Image (cartoon, rainbow, N blue to C red; front, side, top):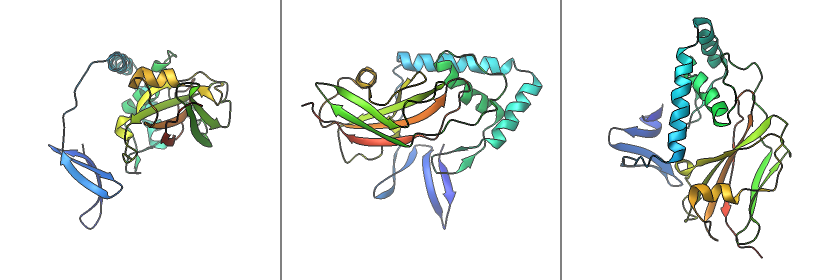
Length: 231
């Protein structure tokens, strides 16, 4: 589905209409033919589908008052879409979004929406790399995270420094335990999704804090740099 913001004709547009995809890079908006993604049915995909199927069944088992509570919660907890617009989810979508995060860490699903606020986002984010020696270490502040707060870490690996748009390449590589400390090595997590890392590749990390008891997460920070060799 394409998303657009009205302008003199169309101010901003993102997504697909039929066989046409609208995207943008550093030079502005461009149009390309939509390609149909393949479905490799990896263990990651199958695991996600299993979680979503289970959560959808749990939603169906809620009573009317519980569903109403989620619908009410969604109106006061809008999310921001990829064009920066505030978007209010339906009750079932809010329920699935929160509980899907909890399902991924094996936590108990919530029948009622959380009362707490999302955790504070990270103040800073970067990484150090020494391919062949100490590997990739995530660096952030404040550190460590709270006792019940972990990090949701997405990564993308590309071979071109000119490829600035990598949002479509990001893959979740881990939801960490609480009290997670800066300068922890994450090489094996990245290579499990993207294969062996090489010097000169461009690594993008997107990281949000997540309360492991409520499933709520912060706005993410993004950091991107070339991988360097160990010395």
